[in-house]
Length: 134
Image 1 (cartoon, rainbow, N blue to C red):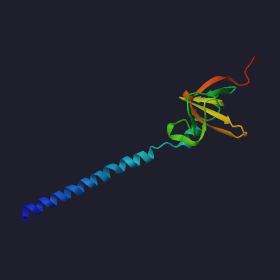
Image 2: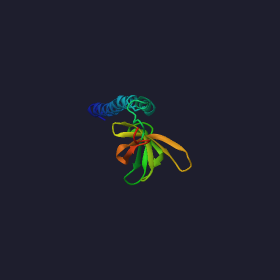
Image 3: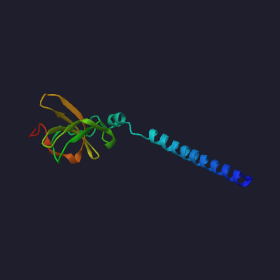
């Protein structure tokens, strides 16, 4: 093999490895930034829960739309609770609005209660509980 070909082959190999290293290094900060910027559902729930801005008294709402309306552990799409859902016609107690979410409680036929956040578009507010002239 001629010296020119050897140099060209070394340059090509170095270029390929350099590209691989560049791709690896370029992806590392993005991965780290994603992990650092990931949403902590528990912290978001703690920050958005509590008595501020609650409905007083709480409201009642009926699930609308079609299919399951899933509960979320915090008011963000990333905080989906896959095993807890309500269906159209179910009635929930609404404690608080937050952006496009409602913090709710649902009591099933067995008396078990479930609390979480539901997208507001899936609920029709029916009025406040314990309403009437006071």
